[in-house]
Image: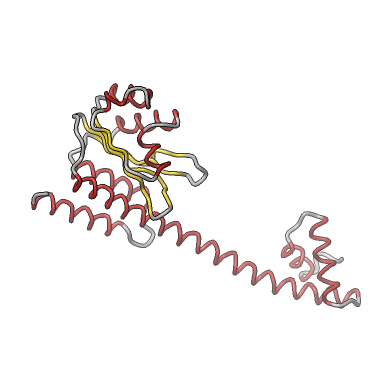
Length: 236
């Protein structure tokens, strides 16, 4: 790589790092990634497919409509280099799309129709977790050098870390909310047990059994029943 390319690469990493701030926009991060990769590697187009978490894949970013159409074709067919990179967690390089034969017929015809002659797909992967693939397309035949291949994967890795970090933060917030809800609910339930125990002259354990039985029989959350008992909106 020349100094100019090195400078562009450093700038790209800095841009991606700057994007990873608090409350950053994941979609903006992915669009930045495809734009920077296309410019850095002189690709005709670039795009990203991402897993929705349920096994379904979606096109979430693209530099132009040409790459988006080719990626959508693969998703509809359930096969193609972009999909294979995601499912295997490995890079897929195609130096000449016309020579792929019958392996991915819909991808081949769609890509050629859009004027693409070669492509390279790398997984968005962190250790054993693969969440999508970054896909580059060229109007010329030929492959990437080892250095450029490593560059693309490194950029994809940075984006993956950012996405998984954001997901972890979001999920940890949900866990914290659930824990806080459980703790708050426990206070209500203890209060409700006291009310029922006093009203019926039973032990706290028996009072809890009455509350839980009512909740189950009526398909209600235990905390909701407890709150109603404490607020005197419900008498067992």
